[in-house]
Length: 590
Image 1 (cartoon, rainbow, N blue to C red):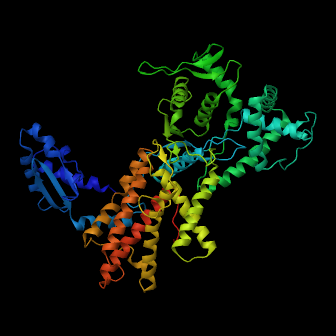
Image 2 (image 1 turned 90 degrees about the horizontal axis):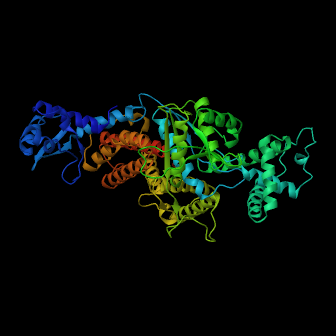
Image 3 (image 1 turned 45 degrees about the vertical axis):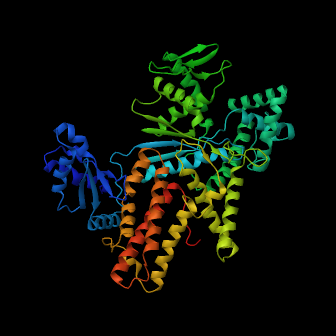
């Protein structure tokens, strides 16, 4: 189904052509003066020089061809040469009726679907998720959902940090505390215990303790590095212990991501590519791409067009150890072999842009990817406190993600109990749904690359551009539909009965609905969930204006009332589909 702006432009292009002017001059845009008209065309201004005519003469010629248009109620030429356009109610109503009949409300899926891998999440195992992990998870999940909805084949990969020095630090501290554990007996040949010798709570205490001590005690640090070497060399007990660490950590991570309504298709980590690194490095040497510089193995990734310094991409440190660069490159190689994607999207803190520029250039130069494989860095800004600095706890530490979720849920629980009578159980369940909407919408309504202020009072408000406001709108629609059914109306039989609008607020609601396909398409093409937030906020405002202007259930004309109910059902369905693309849902009551 064509976008409404394209249908309007087609009508205008035909008029330009019929008047003897170039079709391309008929491009239509939303009016920048909505008090005067709904759409506008500035083509007459652009064509004045080409046709050596005053713009107003061209505009008048075109307007004359639109006098009996089935699209425009009014096409008015205005000095010095603008065309002010107002749509026919019948045209708008027919477009919305066709939206209702379409399975994706007028959205056309992409004609050439791509295979896409999205790298988002990136937590380290054995450490709790903190607020720094929030944006990658929320943005990545929404980008994934939008791309899938558009028809692309999408694979989400968490890309765990599960192989480096942190593993050695944990194992070394476990060895110091519990040297009797069978995993440290390298002569042991039996079966290792099925149950891990620690809980996630113990793991989360062990790592920061060991990390702090390693910074203060060189001998302790050396022992930890020895443990890392044994793990990576395949020493049996250390691998078994590592498997326990992964199992306990991943189970905890899944619970935390589930609270955010975020999931991954792949739970791969750096460990997944460890064994392929030597062969990849050898190929880089043999291909003449990698060379030694001050003892380290590097690949020069400078380009002639560079206007700033782009350092070489380091592949191995001077001691032969691999780096994040190395595992990221090996991961790209593995993804190309296993997933064979057309596109890889990395949802990462924007401060890592130079790092990923180096990695992407190195991957291309060393032919780890095909020439037409797209490598996309989707950098996001920081979530800041009201002081404008990265968000911290009151004590100044990094807040755990589950603490942030709990804080916002408690705020929503308080507001829900204040607003209406409800059971504790229902209030708590609703608070979780609305709290997630407040958190996700508060984040996603900002352009990803921009920093934003986390303001719990604003995010949880039921007024303004917030998640709760969107949900209140959906719940209000559901309530009207329920009352219509209680009063004997048959909701199912009227859902296709959308008619031409009979008042201005109804028309404005329809015109907001009509922008759905263009908004989702733009959000997908630009990796921009904030465009969907902007769309649903506009749609929610349009509905609430219509609701306050129109006595829907009190309308005595049953045919008119049925048309409004059908319009409400479509509005509800579009809003619920759109918030699902953002990764949250609406309750039945608030």
